[in-house]
Image (cartoon, rainbow, N blue to C red; front, side):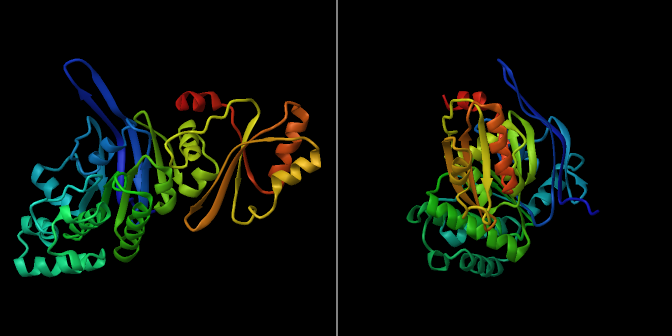
Length: 344
């Protein structure tokens, strides 16, 4: 088996101030394969932005190491690190453009630092602006552009030196939903066209579901769960993943007070059958629908619903088996108290 493009090995990061010590990351280990669009998701303060800065040693881990193509960043000199970072570009939430420079000069900036000849840099910049759909804005200034256009300029600039890895730190958080979808579509196209491995840091499960093939859930500085996006959506194994799946990008977990709650997941093939209605008719017992939504994950329609089942234990067991017999994912929610506390 080939080695991963990025390996995070037992990384911890401690920040010390005069008054206290904060352990932002605790023994994080991850493998990111070449060509992945890998999501790192967590609530605010989970440690995800610290983690992404450790991937290129902009933040040096307190413990552990990061390997790119098997090469240890921790053993590199500052000069070697600077050279390695040419392979690892970043885009940010607030674009970080040079406001006094034109769009084309912004894209040329990293090439100028690398002493690329002026005419070659301009030619490359024009190609990239065409790729991101901004060839007609080459001589505009960032203040004349919308937020989505500014992020496209930032993406073009990030691609200027032909990186192999693109780190996106909350790159769509400042954008409206329509523009977010457009930027994510562009990133997916770049991944497919150039084979660039993309790591997306976000707090929104909707972003992960729209573009990523793999995801790591970060909770209080640790990896709570990691896997294929579809697997994590269908069958989250941790409370942190369940909170994010139920929040569906809204940032809030729906309030669901009560006992005997189950979550069921519908796939494209099962969403046409009125399973819940048929179950109520079969067992002659009502259920409460506490929550429901649908998502498109990797081009596959997925839906989820949280039901409150009857108090009768035997009847409840029969209903759960009925749902499972129809090839639905069924999870009994035993820790909804924690979800309610998060939502209070």
